[in-house]
Structures are given as C-alpha cells and as structure tokens.
Length: 474
Ligand SMILES: C[S@@+](CC[C@H](N)C(=O)[O-])C[C@H]1O[C@@H](n2cnc3c(N)ncnc32)[C@H](O)[C@@H]1O
Image 1 (cartoon, rainbow, N blue to C red):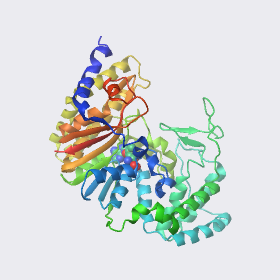
Image 2: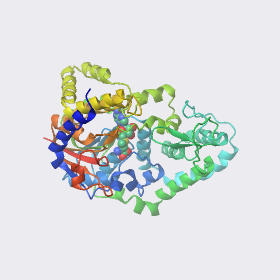
Image 3: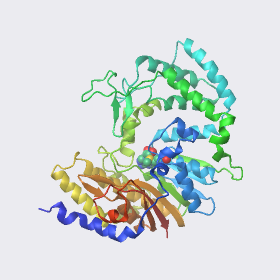
Image 4: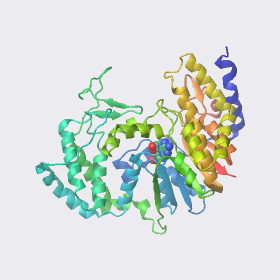
C-alpha cells in the first residue's frame, strides 16, 4: 500500500521549490488591508458588513501601483463590488460578475446612493414611524425556507413585513431601495441566528429543537430598535457634513466616473462571453476552498430577497465548489463549451488540470485519506478536486480576456485537510502559467511569528499561507 509519506510531499515540494523565488512576504499588505475590516470608514460597508470581502484600499493600491492610467477592470467574483466601486472612483470602467443576489442587491443600492435625495429620505422616514404604528393590513410576507423557519420572534417578523409592505408603496424607487436595504442589513441582529460560516447558529431562545451546548447570541434587537438605529446611521452618514469626510474619495473632481457594469450570474458561464484581450486588469477573490457555505450563511438575506428552497439549492450547486455538498460540474462545463463549439478549449483546460502533478498528488492523497477515514467529511476530496477544476476554467478565461501586459490579482488562502497542506497559491499559479500569465509574485501576508522565510521553506510545517497573487499576461 502507498503511504502518504512516501509519495505525497514530493510533487508539491517540487512546485514549491520552483516557485519559491516568487513568494514574497508583503509587509505593506496587512491582514486588515486585505480583509473587509479596512472598509469600516466607508458608508456602505459600515451599514452592511460583507465579511467575505476585501478592502477598497487593497484595490486602490494595486490599481495605482500596477497601471499608469485607468482602463477596464473586472472582478469575476464581485461580492458586494469592492473592486468595481474602488475602480470607478479612480476613473476605471468596471465590470463585475456575481452569482449571489445579495451582492447584486448591495451593488444596486450603492448605485441608488449616487442619486438619492437625502432630505426626502429624512422626511419620509419621519412620517414612516407614525404611519407604521397604525398600519393594520399589509401584503408583504417573508416566505421562509426550511433553514430559516422561525428565525425571528413573531412580533419582529410582523413588524418587518409591515415595514416592507409600506416601503414598497413609496413612489421614489431609490428611497424604496435604501429602505429595503436598511431592513436587509439588520436581519441577523433581529433574528435568533448568528452567521457561522458553514451554517447558521441558533440561539437557545428560538423555537427550534436544538442539540448540543446551548448558544446565547446576546441581545436580540427588536425590529423597531434595529431599523431606527440603522436608518439614523445611514441618514447621518449621508448628510452633507459627514459626506465631506466619509465620501471624500467619491468626490475627486478631476476623475470622470465611468460606469459600473454588474452581471448577475456565474462567471463559469459569463466570462466566455467577453471578447479576448478586453481587460487591463482583474482584481478578484474567489471563494476559498474552505467549506464556507454562502447560501447557508446568507440564508436570511436570500429569503428576504424572495428566494425559495429550490432556488437556494440551485444557487448552492451553481456556485464555485467550496462546500462538501457541491456536485461535479464537469459535464455541465463540457456541454457549455460544446454549445459554443469550443470542445477543443474544454479539452485543453482539462489537460492543464490533469497535467498538474501537484494537483494529481493532492487528489490522490485526499482519496487515500478518505479511504482511511481520516477526513472529517467524505466529500472533502470531491470538493477540493472540483474547486481546482472549476477555477482552472476561470483562470483560462481570465487569461484569454486580459490584454497582453495586463495583470490579474487574486486574493486567496491555502487550506489544510487531514493534516495535509493544499498549496492553493502554487497550484492556481501553475494553471495560470499554462494559460499565458507570468507569475510575477505571490505576496504572502505577514502573520505573527511563523512567517520567516526559513519557515516558509520548511514545507508543510507552517501555518497555511494567505496570499495575493500577481500574475501578468504575456
Ligand atoms: C471571497 S468573495 C468576494 C468578495 C469581494 N472581493 C468583495 O470585496 O465583496 C467570493 C464571491 O464569489 C461569489 N461566487 C461564488 N461562485 C461564483 C460563481 N460561479 N460566479 C460568480 N460569483 C461567484 C460568491 O457569492 C462571493 O460573493
């Protein structure tokens, strides 16, 4: 029998040895800058914390460091649009693809902010509370799905429904969007749940039958408390005295704002539709290969936006594979490429995937660990295999649509399963090289003590790397 020790570190080590000159600890890229936390001074991010996002500061840093003038920028995993709006501020024409309706909703709200009449919003909200307290009939109801049922106290849900019903009758569509957005941002606070990556954690006070140690999420705000405080925050942030400081970056008068183009869909389908050599720059961060389930974490927000059980399930399956529930998409991808008579391209991409020895090694070791029941879920091996396969298609397309000399900047974390490090940075960079990118740098984020270059060379013994890859189209 093959033991993991005999075969496994070798191909990954070889790849590491070959690309090690590209790894560079980036002391100017703190975790804070890379994560959403650096955004908290910017209005939209103060109102809705999309923790999976990166920061505007990171995007602006790369846009100014790696280009001399604005052009066209893309984020194929756009999230709430950090790349797109940071690009717009600096005069870039921005394009984003995002599969979660949450991202599209937040991005539409950002666009509404550009044209909203703040005085009108103030007047409407003042009248609002009085009208709402006497409103008896309402026709809007959140339609729960199995994983969100009983998430709110009864009176909270009733007030929320009333609020939504009333705000949907407001004539000014931009104000309606902001009011709806305000409710959207408080869903977690007013519920018995807490976002927890792979699922929602439920508070002991909910009606659900819960097993395990009781969880107390602390104070659960009433809808009235939460929405009033949120709307006050929004109004305050949008008021002229605040906008000078908070919106300073939006107010750069020398820069002509270009359009932000939002495409709601899967980048596996949408990227193929762009012509070759179209973009000057791509700045993106795909889901990490870490079992994080966006459709469960954001289940409340999805039902709020009208998604039913089937739609949530379909969404989960259409997203880039990063949960143990994701099924293979290979046949779907084969048909997708066949439908545009690109069977050869499909084969070429699969060949690059199969040609990666490090990838083959990772798949083999995970299959072996699975057999030995050393992985805590038997679908981890499938998830990892498909995560890389799908990203191989994305990287092919990103290389095709980037202009020669243009950059692709990708933020991603390595992962470890069954004690085995999976060098996501190296394997994806190897795919990228095969499709026409040079690997200029793999910036490694500094972390506490364990980050000296000797330790980085000590393969597999360190904390997993969190990186920003810098690829340049040949
Ligand atoms: C790490 S987040 C990116 C966050 C973004 N950088 C920001 O600052 O908001 C990854 C995003 O990819 C999206 N996503 C997952 N699968 C996708 C697919 N097939 N096509 C497009 N977007 C997808 C997820 O919904 C998620 O918003």
